[in-house]
Image 1: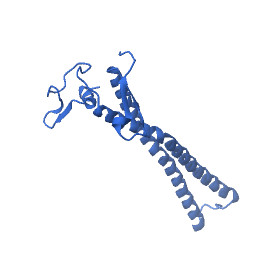
Image 2: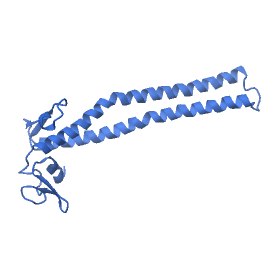
Image 3: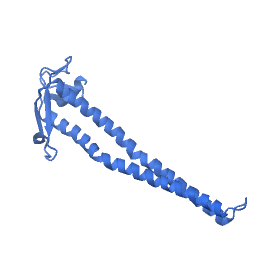
Image 4: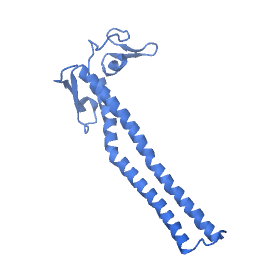
Length: 182
């Protein structure tokens, strides 16, 4: 995590439009190699923890809905395509299309069948849009949560969240972890 990432969790963070993020203690840009010796976790850290974990939890809760949408849309689109192909095949077998020149009725049947196949293909394409959006958002949220968890492990901290509590200050409990720092 970049140095500015450490500052986003710290209570001493100050922002100056000219210089960007500054340390409230030194009034300078943060300058340390691995860990800030003066970092203090409080309301900023709790707000970030809630923000990142809430986004991650919402995506996890959405997973079944997205998969259901994918399966249902794929199924309906495939059934439409197979049904229309089977319908046209049956019409050929019973002799509806018996000449090389199509009547107006036959042309309408083929046009409507082609339209139905296009609808089926569109449904299959529509099935993947929310799924792709979900996987991209989920990957980004997982990576952000992992970076945050690694960050807190660096400082030998861990947290617990009560998602029913809407106040970040009381919903998050920050505590020293018992994990060895690598």
